Length: 255
Image (tube, rainbow, N blue to C red; front, side, top):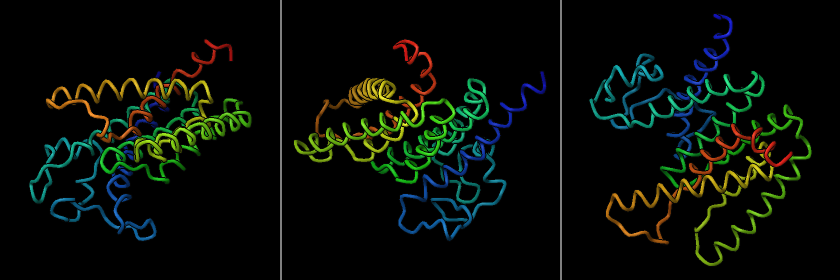
């Protein structure tokens, strides 16, 4: 019994560490002064005070500090807690649902998805570094599931179709669909194929529409075609759901 818990526990702890690292990247990557060649200690984004190790314990520091900076007492964004919780929980789920090698690739994909989602939410952009991480995980997934290299053709097809959609959509209305979304669907297709991409787009669109309409209603605003919303997080969520359901989806279509 104890031996069967070692791998899930290991993935959960790794998820905590990776989640903390992702928080650093989410904050620093969109800022022009960030360089991976010049690492520096974490600081409070409000007072700029350098943080100690006890301020950076995943999940626990946020709870013990009651969501406030130890030094300036200003509120810490709940994003830090949410990212660490999502990362560790998804790593744990992957370790339970898949064999270790597949769980590792799924966790790599999830790390990239979380990275691009939270940056897109705040800055309306999808960083190339997140796309690369997802692509590496998706490539490993396709190799381990024996869908490589055939799935590369499917991914190329998905990318081509989405590129055409991107060009046509932006021809009629500028910034209606971001190129980062095209890249995101393209690399996800390396793991999920064409069928998986269709489910990703369908699930992502339904969830995005529901969230958008609900948010507009709660704010007392009218639904407008001019409002820009980050679509990346919805594609990321849908892509992960599709990845989890991929065996059932493929068996449904006899693939």
